[in-house]
Image 1 (cartoon, chains in turn brown, blue):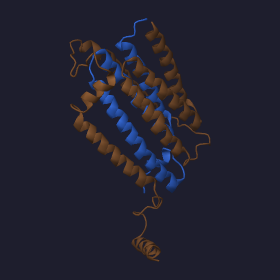
Image 2 (image 1 turned 90 degrees about the vertical axis):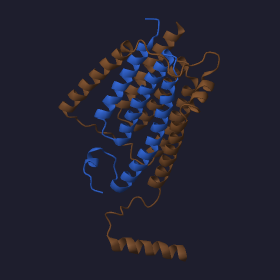
Image 3 (image 1 turned 180 degrees about the vertical axis):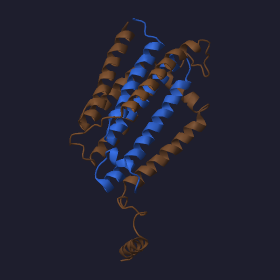
Length: 191
Length: 102
């Protein structure tokens, strides 16, 4: 009963928030609506018993990703009115057809897999966070380490890309300009 | 109606995915295109968590964790590229990105 009420309430809130995100013409409204939608999505994870996933959703999305987007919006001119493109009719029709096929596949997937058995069945007597830790650090240790390496690569790429000297293109400038630039920096460092 | 099953969550995930697809198709500003991709990733996460719960299997939640990690690194690299593009060209419109010169 309460589960149904919570599900419908949060489904309505999430859909309306994401609808605002994709339809508004103000970037700040889109950002705020997206952050609210992320928090409402974590409610589904708490309803489904995935407590650790819900906490991670709030921390990562509304903590890290939204802060990054808010930080990035300071660089861009987002206050002006956004113009949306009038899309190609054939592309929209084709994408809608693909989406319809996807919906059919999603609804037929649970019917086809009625005899599905759990690969890593969850125990009943311990909490969700403990189960997640046990599975993550035994069965999924290598993907976990690879994800850590990928996050490190993304962090270094973000630092390098947003750093100084990236507003000039080295491939478009001539060879002599690069040499003079290097000489200038060398004299600056030496002096 | 009052019993929430797996299909309810899959329908919700499909609706959110459709909203994200509409956003990807109609957005011209690249920052708002990124917002739409976040919606796509989150709708898939809901489906993973629901299947994980209703089949008593933790693999769905594990996959959702990796999807979140990929989304975080995608935002970091994508925003860095957007900042570089904005420094060079002064705007982040998708139509100007179609010409691949420098």
